[in-house]
Amino acid sequence: MSLMDETDPEMNGEIVKKSGLLGVVYGIGMNINGIIGSGIVTSPGIIWKAVKSPKIVLFLWLVGGIVSMSGSLSYVELGVTHKVSGGEIKYLETAYPNPKFMMSHLFSFMFIFAIQPGIISAVLQSAAQYFWYTIKGYRYDDDIRQVMNGWHLPFSPFWFIKLIAVGFLFIITIYHMLSNRWANYINQTLAIIKLTTYSIIAIAGIYRLITNWSIMFSYDGWNNLNYSLDEFRNVEKKLIYSNSISVVIVIIVYLLVNVAFISVVPASSIDSNLDETIAATFFRQLFGESEVIVRIFTALVVLSVMGTAAVEVWSGSRVIVTAANSRFFPRYSQELGTLNNHFDTPVNALFAQFIWCTFIILIVGSSFTLTTFELFSTFAMYSYWIFYFATGIGLLLIRRRKRNQTFKVPLFIATIFILTGLFILIFSFVVDDRCPEAMKLDLSSCDEYSKKERIQQLSPIFISYGSLLFLLIYYWCKVQLYG
Image 1 (cartoon, one colour):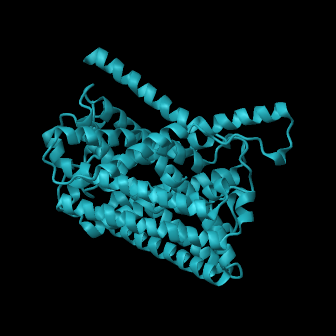
Image 2 (tube, rainbow, N blue to C red):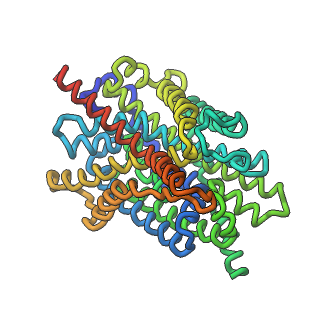
């Protein structure tokens, strides 16, 4: 059964309360808070190490912004056409009605059990790493080199970082349980802190430039509003303005922050090691003489990244409620779809999400030699782009069937989004498995190293397709047994 199957009207009335709470300003804030997060303070170091050219780095971030804008506008058309919450769940069901509910069924499972937990886990891992830097004054991976899975690593810092991430998830979950309104206030405050922090980074970096003469994960989040359209006033106008303005702001901020990193952080520090806490390195270079200022700014980065996690927790719980409203869960739909009588929040859905994400962080994240951030972000984004691509194609199918649409994105913009998805799905299998010269291995050992490295780098993609295969078999068995 898909999330948008026949719903229980009585249950539906209990869950979906069209209060008209959200408007353009909130939408912009929510999108910015969702998009700008761990990616911009984690991915630049990874990208810089890979391409080793400031000009190419800036060009790639600009391309990422263009793709995100094309995706955002494509989702505006889908949101305006459907005018209901649920995002891809509804869009895929409309675009691919046969086999009945198959596409929305697959996305429902992948989003609830893999994509959203993966994003939340990656973001919280980044927050925990910056928190470690704030407390200790140095990068957590200075103490370890992750050449084996986490089960063979010492408690500190590897497992300590994971417990910090779970602690952050607990805090975010609790305040979302207690009050929708206060959760909105806190999340908006975190968005303000985020923009302020990254604006300071950009200004400081540009000043130094003048006087001194993983990209898709970073941009992900532009479709968060499509999961909560029931809570928006005047969907057409609000969604167009909220999505477009927020993505433009994010593109500008990302480019300026990258200019800052390029102008301040020495290239040698990036070339020598993978830097997933490049903002901390930036502050150390900029304010190295003042340890207090460095740690204050890294603390602000922690709050900024937590703001992203908060938006993901918020939107993820709403999707679980939508799923429960459609009797998606065999045994616990009533419990997961019911709002708490006292707090008027989806307490059960939030709690279930907390338990599952904790399992992902502690167990799954410790079973590979890839860094936790790289594992979760790659798996979540590749899985997401499978459905982004299907949704982009679906947009064209829906457009053919529905002629009287109030908003249509230009065809070339939708095409950019679709072709990008195809490119990502194909070329993600091309990985850098070369044997490092510094290791000075013989030919046989180098081949063995390359083989293991290739398997590790492709493991998130294999997990993604393995999950889809399992769900397809499950769907087929269900159809055969129950029709």
